[in-house]
Image (cartoon, rainbow, N blue to C red; front, side, top):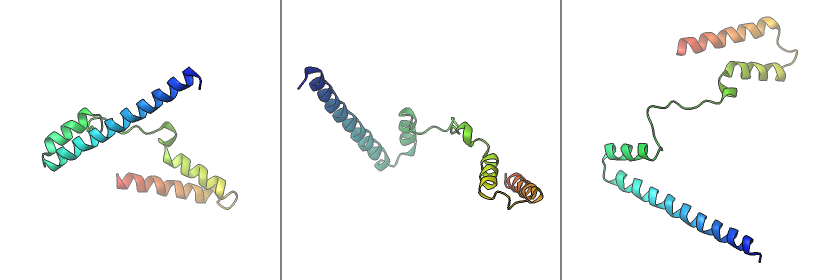
Length: 103
């Protein structure tokens, strides 16, 4: 076996061992905090580990930022010719009205 390949395999083995040990320790620590029934310390620890944060909104991918556009594009492709322009406009208006009233 080539020394560099041997080093690489040794590195991967140690890396995987350390990652597994770290995950197990985090899990055991969080379980310990949960069993103590102290929500304040549990959420403080989650926040410090960057597992939970109340201040940052979720990042929505750009391609999902306008769901109406995606749905309309799908409907147009799947129903080519079966929807008239009037029917399409009615559906779009209904979707906008529904989203505004439910907000």
